Length: 378
Image (tube, rainbow, N blue to C red; front, side, top):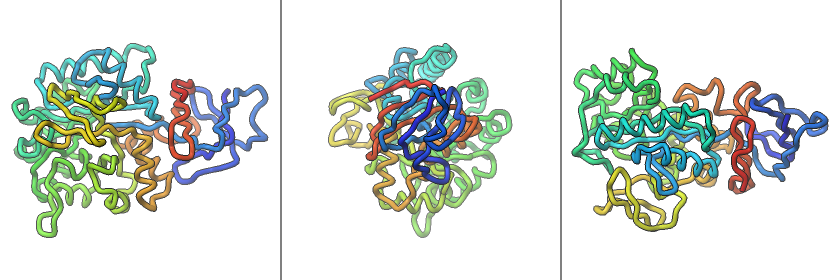
């Protein structure tokens, strides 16, 4: 048995102080520090926070490695890097590249996930961002690899794909969306889409349950044309938000939270440049220039981020009046709920996996614990 003491414990609906957290591979109990069992291994949080491990459901790379390298070595390197940011579970995210590369990336993720060995943050599935997207909202994706939505591809890979991002207007009559929704547990997300409000909202009736990086690469909300943004905010879909303060103005954080509540998921959309100094990198074969905290294509298009998820939580907390426990939910419980693993992950709750992160009072990661084992220590 292990015990974390001298911590502010971030729970789903409150932050508790003056208590200790007991765990082994699972969360076992919260007790007073006087009631820590004799013989327990003590971890002193030194007055910092203990939070549920973060879950990043949209991340392309880290430490110079790209999910679309399609190698187990790259997936392991990404997993081992992001555990330093308090991430205990993630969805390696593919791009709109040649379908053979996407299939290779899925195979690499399967191999690492199923190996039974530890490499870092746990793979909870894959987020396939494309190739079923709109050319007019491709962002940093490569137009020559865009395809029409194909439920068959999703069905064949439903053992590893947890989220599929597609443009609903490219699916006539939402036929492929309907098949994915009825034949698999894969979450259909609208993203990189030029749909109008009516089309986007209608798609949510037939299987779209999520929105990929809200505001980015989708039709905006205006007073006469609410667009995909309006449909996402005015429906029950969960929504991703890149919280690096660049992709979305921080003034919008609180507004989106007030509208989406527990349906809001913070993501990094991190690129291979994450965790590395400024310079030139690649993403899905495209040249990326990382400068002044932003990654751009050669034509100036913003392409993902270099955000660390612990810092994303802190960005929102320091730029809004949202309670810290709700900011943490947006990076743990809410994404766990969106991908269907909240029964065992996403919050500090008796019986759930002991995936935990200990942070200082500015949310720098001190320790990351996965399945009750300390896997990173600053």
